[in-house]
Image (cartoon, rainbow, N blue to C red; front, side, top):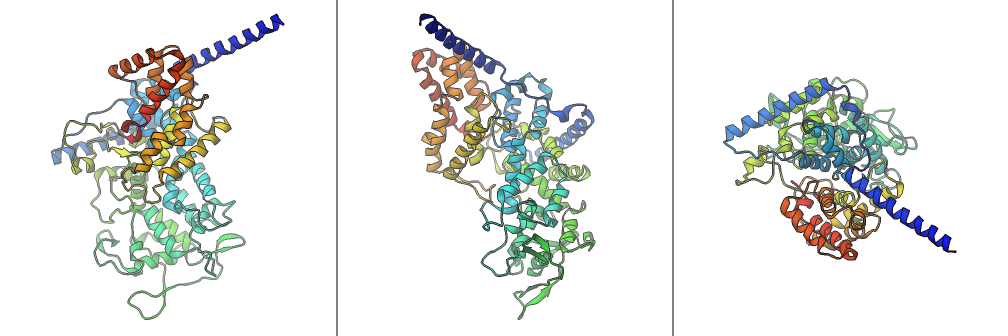
Length: 553
């Protein structure tokens, strides 16, 4: 019996020692992060990216000089990595990724990180959700015939494979089939009003979605009347005119032949004219499909939807490329080069940086990954948001400082989940880890408040949101779970200095300064060992509720 007890004690001791060894390794190194495949033997591509980024930097510098603006200094690479991660992946870097990031040559750290994220499913999933909001909204839509998750999953796959953006949009506009096995058609089924007998996709809603999401233009205000305020410019870029009600419905007419049947979304065999009673007419009339500008790009080839797709994605249709560039910039910076992002005037004027990026985007085959690499290489992404001078609207418009943007609900939830884990939470994580994070994030976003489709509109923080961060379930559960980082750091950390450093890295993506480190270390050293867990949780909680954690800065 005694030998059995000794054996149990040795087994328990080996488990404890093994746990300490494992955690020590995690704190110092964590899991190996694979080198991005796209950086191997790719010097020519990276050289081209750097060249465009330098042109952008020069354009900003000239603009600042012409406006007599003082610009912010640059921040360190870790903060840049945090900004990029929040922008395109919706979360913050894990401790594992930070360790690997810091092991790279300093000059290559940011490009390594961008390449790493572009090969991570977190990025494609997050970008797919952000694009989906513009394409089909955030609501559940028509029962049975609309599969939003299928659409997001399909779009994520396309973005992960870096499918050319023009091809991607063309498929969305022209695809046929069932909403289950042909996910792109959910762009159409989302607009079906099931209470109506026709059970057809709504051409009016489709025209509004198309103009806003793909062209960056709000012409849906022309649905009911002509533009009397000269706020919508259409026609030829060299001969602009105010938009008319006919312009909008001529665009909607491209969708008149689309129907929903047992075979899914398809074009009817017999043409169905689009009919509408315009405001200044006494009866319903047939409206012919006509593009609202750059008519020479409409080759009139194929059916109506194919004609429209060819025109929208044409390389000479710069509003299409501008809209994509401006949206990606807004996702990474929190605000676009032109704001609102879906109200870019046809005739300009356009920021020079927008035109440089648009030229590069078109000339490189509408490559979204390259676009993100270029933006990631610019100095604009490295500017500080905390400066010693008064920030004016001119500073923000000219990107002379990095904008301070409140984190979106899913970004806050992603940061909470990742900061309380020493390992990276991604598609390679255990299924239970991902399910737990998914459930907690869904509930958190629901309570925090989803910004909806108009996601770039600045909103103030509410009392409910502050209370959710102060004593919400997700924060409490993540901090108090014995399987998460706070518990491990409190009981198995090799020393207090390392524990404090890791807490700052996992929450704020930076090392603590001397004052912060000294204060935190002294507080933990003065705490009894059996109570240290509560002190570690308190430190985590304090940092999570700081403005530095809740804002992109």
